[in-house]
Image (cartoon, rainbow, N blue to C red; front, top):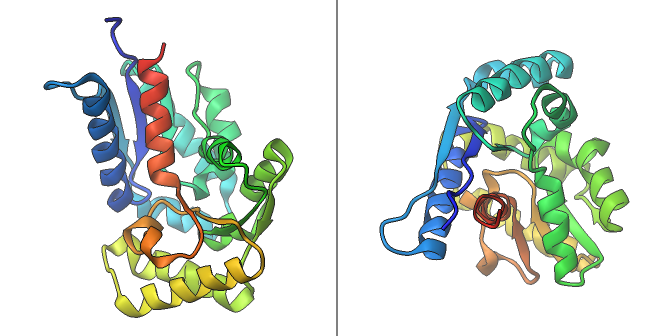
Length: 234
C-alpha cells in the first residue's frame, strides 16, 4: 500500500472543534485501512483570542498574514495537504494558499460538492455573522456550485453568532440555545431550504440530524472526510 499523505491541520479556531477534526480523521482512516491504522497528520493550534480580536477589528489582512505563517510552518513540518479547520477564516483562504506550495482543501468546496451530490439546489446557511453575511463563503457556493443560499433574518443571525462565540467555543452546550437553533432551522426549511449547512465547525456540537426536518451538512465532518479521501486516494 502506498504511504498515505500527511494531513496538515491549522486549528484552534476553536480547539473545541479541532478536537472533532482529529477524532473524525483518525476514525475514518481506521475504517478505511482497518487494524491499528491511524492518520498521518500534523496539527498546529493557534491562540483563538488573537484571531478573534482581528476578526472584531475587521483586520483580515493581519489575520491572513498570521495564518499564512502558520500554514508555512505546517508545510515545513512535512504536511502534503492542508485543512484550515474553521469556516470563518476561509475569508483569508487565498492568502494562505498563496503562501504555501501544498494544496489547501477548501471547506466550502467540499461542502458544495457534498450538497450537489445529493441533487439539492437551495440550502440554508448557519455560521458566524462573517460567514452568513460576507460573500467569501456564500458567494463561492453560489458561483461554483449554483446553489441558492438562504440565511436567517438579522435578529436570528445575531443570535447564532452570539451562541457560537459566547457558548460553543467555550465548551458550553445550552438546551435553550438548541431549541432556538431548531426553530431557526425549521424556519429555513419553511422558506424552501432543502438542507441546512452547519457553516461553523462548532455548531455540530449543539445540533444534529435529529433536530432538523431536512438534511444537515456538518462541515467539520465533510471537511475531515475529504481530507482522508485526499490522503489515501493518491
